[in-house]
Image (cartoon, rainbow, N blue to C red; front, top):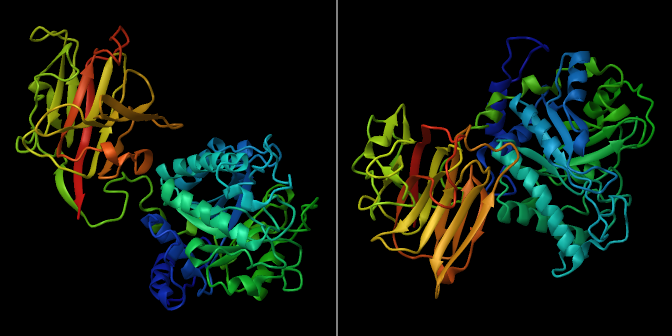
Length: 584
């Protein structure tokens, strides 16, 4: 490995080179494969980076600062640290729970996390979860639960637990959609007796951890998590470890002035688990009433001398924090410490890039693609009309001249101009007679207009044509912020199953988003920006015949209501790519 010589602020740094060389050496020491084998490439890059740090002489300990709980989480404490030291901590911490109220709050912590991620920082999320055995939502210190009861299906405790998991997953899915890798640290300090999940039977605790891992990774499709096991220093630091297949990083929580083996116990046991290690929480002067006069150089000196495998730390907030104690500038300026501006930019290279391709593993082959790079519609792939003469556009004439291909985009145009006896002029394209496929993954990337009476859609119909069945990859109507995903079939009469979704801050009209559909013999799964949003699993009625593509701009036709004076004319429904895949 190349040794890196530099000073803080030195413009001639070779940090990235050192990281790349270190990653190449990782396999000889540890295996940097994520616990979730379906983790996205960003997770793998961040995890490899942590693995690379242990062999360095400098630039090897990632700095971190916890912000606050729930609605208190923001970037102010990070800004105070920067103002005092000239450095931004590399890792931001936040908590999805409100600590005392026993509730889950994700929107405010996520806003801070997303913004810090955009600025090139790493993100750690935890949750002081409430006790699901308490019907009133007991706080984190509300005891009196056997953790094994959380997994007893059909019980009120299990129902409340699953509801809590869904709330947490919703927040983590928002971070996934924003391209944020999360160091997810659940059930911290589980070897102590002060939280309801603490000091439980190890086998029961491990079962609950593994259930959460499987539920988040598989059912919820969370591929942006790095799983952190963080007991308190002391006894039994390895007793609750769920296994290499369920953990990525290791941590110890420690609140003490003295960084030495006498005062911080359990280090040898936890590093023997052979994963990257750090101080997942640190605070001086014990766990209550710190005076705020600690010399943080002592912390770093103790880490270097007694805990050499440390590759990250996260200081607690309030008067334990980097913002309120002494000599923090010198500590963060030490060559051993990695601050935000020194993180390799490659860790964030895939952040906010458009999602494309099947979100599940398999031997996928691209069977259809149009990126609309020409100056006209590709007639080998599409026709600018509907097989039955009209779609739901019974108040609009679908004019081929309203199908525009320009600047790498397909643009379907709608106007309030009468044509061919219709009140409006609109557009549609279909792949009827050009392309159809049974099963696979279908996706398109669209920017969708809003307005009274507008009805853009991307959907599938059987070839040769009949109805039902019909799979709507998405539809939107008027100025409703929701995206509708529906399957129509005929099972002794017409039936349908659908779901609508809208996310905080999600705008399908201001930005391009990727809408995907996985269609298999036993399930149909809908995705938005690579995140699963709906699933249908009644294999008895899932269509098993080839279907073709339709991109349609409906208007003033029943469900979306009538146009009015607020409807924007002309309106454009835009697409920059359509892709279809099939697997063996």
